[in-house]
Image (cartoon, rainbow, N blue to C red):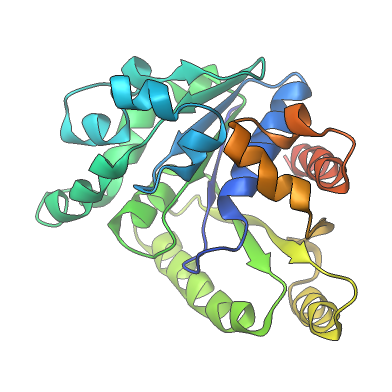
Length: 254
């Protein structure tokens, strides 16, 4: 049965897009058929899997939302077998304005994915670093939420707002939505703060926290500039091993 997971954090720079790309890649390497949906106007997911040039020449998420293309029209293969991309571009920023007055504005992505999602084992949705209409579309379309959480103090402050938003969505537009887990990213074991954040969140949320922790890793930061996931850039680095472990853990939570 297909699983649709949305990655949400209103704070930028927490490793959200990196996690979508590399979790998706390792799920595909495990034999799963995976669709990455870039629903962020910054389109970092698209460029991170080498789809930026193809997206400029074709159609993407904005055309789907505006009714000028179907989701099937825009999906493209990536360099990883079994991993596919629905790309985005800066044009999608216009959707935040256009959707405001539309009826059912929070269900456009859900409706667009409906005809194709069962063709994939996993659909992973990358949203903007905000809790606006695009993110609400992601939450409406998903079965599960994965929250990447940077190991720093301000991340703790933002977590409560994310959880409040998820609860509102669960009560209103998407009653089936559940939290798959909280993922610690950019972990630096040398700092006391990182250790404290992990301890506090883990003690409060218990088994909703992934046991896999993503460390700070230069190779993870370099891979997107080459347009490939870490499994193709440096599969031996600690970042790659961490996402491989995370993929196994996500599959185990199915």
